[in-house]
Image (cartoon, rainbow, N blue to C red; front, side):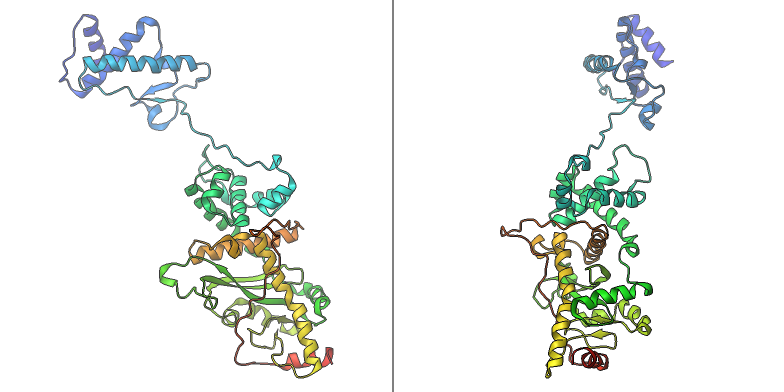
Length: 439
């Protein structure tokens, strides 16, 4: 009613007072636009815009579907006309607000990934992501239910791009900003993607990190016996340090015996460098023997003692009924031969650490320290162990690349033996092995 009266007043040569109410001023603005556009036959309802107070603006849903491509010229004409009308209304109505319109079909930016597996060579994929094309696609299909947004959004990052960006981060050990730029996203968005992908990966940890079943023990024993001719070995145990920037409240706890901050990671591997157990929740100041005593591996091995199986470890561990360590001061030729065989067998865990850190540079000292909380560093370590096992299972080759010194990064890590324990709990099994196999 107000709009019709205002239009009639304008057509009769009247004017509107600047001190009118807000409703009158709004109706006057709409009436002037209608009155100015009507003579040229311009239909506002057919363009891709709607008034601010309309349902289309509040909910982003058009009242009728139109083709913006065909109405492109009409939309441009409408925008230019609104600028002209606002200039006129600014003189007629002192308190007039500029014309604010919303597109019925909003121009939402669509995410366009900068990485495409189909256009990349197989060697380049393995060097960049440490997995081949088929393995990455299989991993994406497995993690897709956890990476999809619960609300369908046209701007959501595809699961494939999320997985590729995290794999690139783990493999390169670079900063988030660098990885985010190469993946076509912002650094805050990549931070969220990293947490999301790590959480999705850890849900499948028991599928990728599995201790040998009872039926697989004969094969595992045979593989270890081929290394050093020590019988009944089903795993090599040792610890390695992963550097991090510690929080202020736990700075001293994370400082290891080499005077840098780290997490002490305990790993049990098989003869083919497959990781069968990992514990990454202890800081660098904790001794290897303490981690072993407070780890679930103790319970697992004790349950298998009826099958007469052992683990093999360095002198940093106590000699137990299920753990063989080297003789500290060999006095006989048999003990020397046992130490030599022990070293050949246990060296597989050093090669495993070297391959793991060479494949995922974020765990290596050359990749700088991880600037995350100890809890998130633990998640990154376990995720790298899972991906390491996935690469071994799918027989993905490890392609060496040039290191920072111009040479080739070696896939073998030097031994990091902890200080020796003061006591040896049980040497009966070790003495029996020496007498039966090394006399």
